[in-house]
Length: 499
Image 1 (cartoon, rainbow, N blue to C red):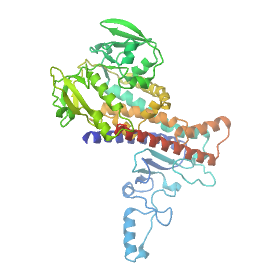
Image 2: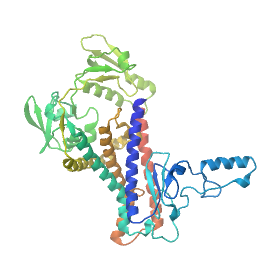
Image 3: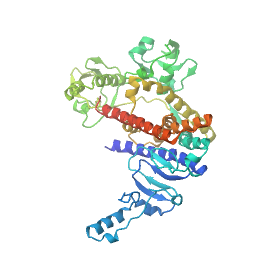
Image 4: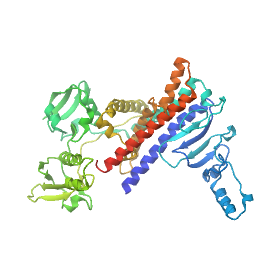
């Protein structure tokens, strides 16, 4: 429970920060071009007002809009309670209504700031703009409205959020490098080498090999980004038994296939049980610290990678049609320990884990320090590498495996560590900022990129799309985004049940 709470808090803090900064980018350019903004909300609407430029902030904190019979007018909560009392006691002459918030915007009201109750984004309501706030446009455009501004100004207002996301990512990466430096294990210091799948072994690799680089690229360390490099390479440079040799590759491998367990290549981790989770299947099966498993269901186990791959294969055997009884049978394993002829039986956890912590190799860690001036270009370069890799991988979304890998809120929350780590938190926040920026710039109606596309169309053709067309495009875009949101979170739910 504590792990879920820590992950959730990190996710909400990161999301809140990124949404506020993204919407702040729109807000900044809107104010720069003297475009009026009626609302600035973090998360979905129907929330608690914080303050506005024409009202006391504490009073705004205690207000919540309540729609009355008089349409756009509302009451604060305390006034509503009093009015209910007056109604029940027959004192209707004392009932009062009070306009709060910007239910009907007037220039003198300024901007209303608030926090919504549903953490799925945020928005700035820019006057004269057709967006998800569904505002009613006046018959005649006013000079302070979005639709009255030149196309180039509207373009910058719409791209302000995306620009802010990328700038935030650059700044965070630079700050992390300046504060903590860059820590990694050199490839040449990985004395146990790497673990390869059967497919990789058919290509010429052997367990224990070290991949030092591909084509004309040298790897100082090893991380998941290098698997992407490997998928497009023609030659891999390998160190084997102290000698260097080349392994010829096809140059067109599918990245998703390479990342499936067993991975095409992974860091080899020797099997050595370090601790047992209390109440876990491992404890019930009498596993102890220092034990080594030699086989699971007849499959030889040479290292920790084999344990992970064997259990992952059992999980993959559960289909959508499988029953609870089928799952229970698949989770029941038979294994042997080193120097023990006794056959042990254990029923795995629902997520197909045994419940022990393996001791990780004690490799030498190298840390590169960055000065202030060095960290800035290094942060920009790091962000560019992350963005390039993310864009490159998008082509897999249109495959069956790629679509199945799309995740929602649970998947995003699970990327955060189970213990609070500020360095890891900021790195993941920068990564999410890049994703948020790129996804918003896609030319889909209802996203910033869709609005920007219409502004570019006007700039190059001199013809402005009609308000009616923009409204219909907005509805189509919102439908597509809602469908994607449901699909991504449905994938999360299916994964929770091992489907």
